[in-house]
Length: 160
Image 1 (tube, rainbow, N blue to C red):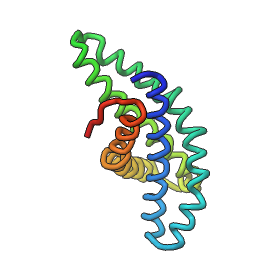
Image 2: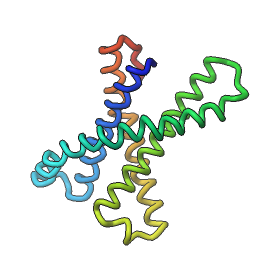
Image 3: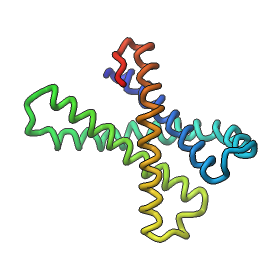
Image 4: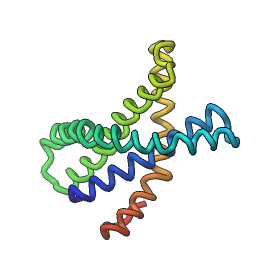
């Protein structure tokens, strides 16, 4: 993937995940009703702006750098280019998911004023709940949509 494609991919992924995870959190807390939709629609623009401002830059600078270091470390003894590429994709995907999920869920807990009232066990359980949700949303909805958009805009092959 070229740098331009990676930027577009990251932008679409961050925006999609921010919007969908916000909706899921609000729906889980308030139920799916008119008030929830109104609050979601009012908050989607700030959520997307935050995804652009923080998540996109954080992902590009921190998560990407961390995944590059992990890829170098985990593939240093490998010689097969195809195997390296496959392992690199897996490492990059999981690093992005773990780092972004941890930072975004912690940010939400801080903004809600909940973090200070949680025990360590509650925080860990909350993180794994968010991670599980983020994984399924990413794999079932966001990644297929992003791949279709990327295939149309850059002629890259669709997967899944």
